[in-house]
Image (cartoon, rainbow, N blue to C red; front, side):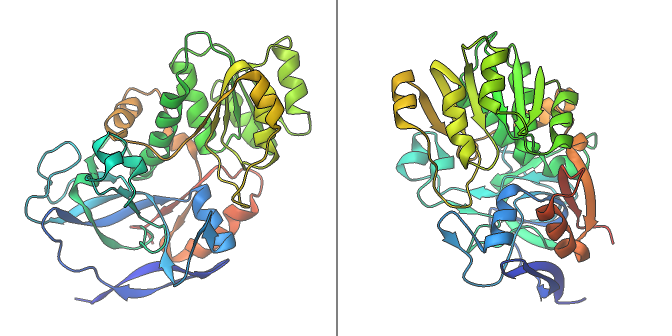
Amino acid sequence: MSATMRAARLYGPRWMMVEDVPLPPAPKPGEARIAVTAVGICGSDLHNYEDGRIGDTAIEAPMILGHEFAGVVLEAGAEALDGNDQPLRAGQRVAIDPATPCWRCELCEAGHPNLCRRLHFCGLYPDDGALRELMNVPARSCFPVPDAISDAGAALLEPLGVALHAVNLAHVRLGDTVVVQGCGPIGLLIQRLMRHSGAGAVYAFDRFAWRADKAKEWGATGAWTLEEDPVARLQDVTGGRGADIVVEAAWADHSVGQAVEMARLGGRVMLAGIPSADEVRFKHSTARRKGLTISMVRRMKHTYPRAIELVLRGVVDVDGLVSHRFPLERAPEAFAMNLAYPPGVQKVAIDVRKA
């Protein structure tokens, strides 16, 4: 048996290679070895691919990206209990939470493991991610998925979990008017969940026409490209009142300032997008005089069971997000294409087990 496996490694900005790497060791107690089945390319992956960093975390050595992923359990170590506190078994299909908190620090003890001060995260330097054939993961991070959910769908439970967390933070009320800036996968999922949480009108904006059209397909009350002034359009459709909730799920550049302008007096602004420049700007006097509540969306916390249920009930069609698929050997091509955003690109999935 070969002592190596295939993996896609990032060496620097826009420099990715698929090559042989060593197999993972036998799983330790509390770990599982999985065969990766599918990986979704996330906007944060694209930040790393384009810039060799995300925020202030720079890639200082070749590493494997990928944090939206699913797999099949090949071997479970001793005391390997899954995220539902049940024993993991070989052959189970699982979705994997990419975050490994310490479970002991102040924030973990307070019920906020997404804010753990010792957090490790798959695909964030220095921790390798899922763009490889095999990997060891904490059993607690694994959530069994039924056969009704596809491999790619299981991988996309991760962005669905982030969207769930964003909606939780927004405290949406029945009849609220919501704006979602950015109609990528996270934005579409937030939009969908807002409607199912009781929001009234949900408006969406995106720079690409096909993504605005996708928002309409997913139930947006109205969706427009940035050829129109988003602030003026929102003021027009709300009669000058503004939105109760504005979710920035795009590029976190000038869109943050627009979010502040679009929110009503006393409204809520949720910042889910990640800026390339690692800073955001908005007009302080506007935010202050409106008395806005501004929240930062940091990942999620124990959302997989609910995400699985939402997919099984047909509330969210995660497979409907996938526009392009590539095998692992073509991962560099997949990243280059996704970064270029040719017409029609929505979510790119890497089918690791398929040639």
